[in-house]
Structure formats: C-alpha cells, structure tokens
Amino acid sequence: MILIKEIVQQVLTSGYLSIADQNQMQLLLQSNYDSEDLDAFIILQRAIVAGEIKQESRSQKTTLSTAGKDAAANMKLAYQIAAEMAFAAAMALTMPKGSKDQTSFGA
Image (cartoon, rainbow, N blue to C red; front, side, top):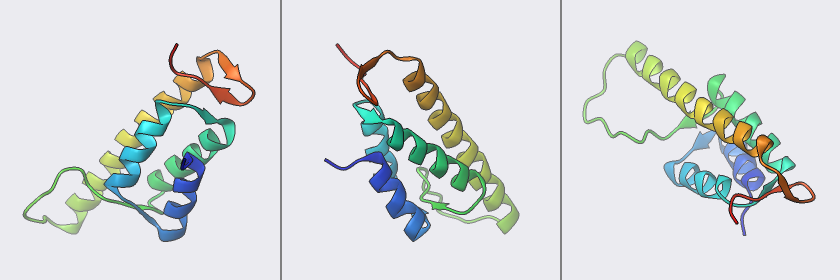
C-alpha cells in the first residue's frame, strides 16, 4: 500500500501535485497513517503555500485570464488545501492512538 510520505516525495521531486495524488492522499488521511506521513503532509502543505509545487486544478476553466488572476486563484486554492490539510492534521493529532505511531479513524 502506498503511503502519504511516498506520494509527497514524488510530488516534491516532480514539483507537480495531480488531482489523482490529491484524491489518494485524501483517502489515506481517512485510514491509518503514521507520524512520518503527517510530517510529510505538512511539508507538502508548506511547499504548496510557498508556490514551490504546481497543482492541478479541480475546476477546469475553458478560458485563461491574466497571469495575475491565475496566480491569485492558485494561491486561494493552495490556502484552501492547506486549511484542509491542517484540519486533517489537527483531527489526527487529537484522536487516540490505535497503535504505536498510528492513528485509527474508525471502530
């Protein structure tokens, strides 16, 4: 099974976060992961906010506006994803540990 930290490493190497990567990490955040995965997720979040990672947009626009509007839209999306990641991290950190370095979301 692929781990969040493996996806993050690939994204940091390529400089690109695809929708497929985003969806995979979302699924993994709903299951078991360890503190290394969470650390990697936070590093990715910071790289997105810093503009170091290009991110595939979930909304497909048929026309492109000026570069300034695109940059603002990308930054807004980065902050939205960063907020979602921070929320997931906060939830994970407040959950009781199921086993060493793993959080269990479920029964």
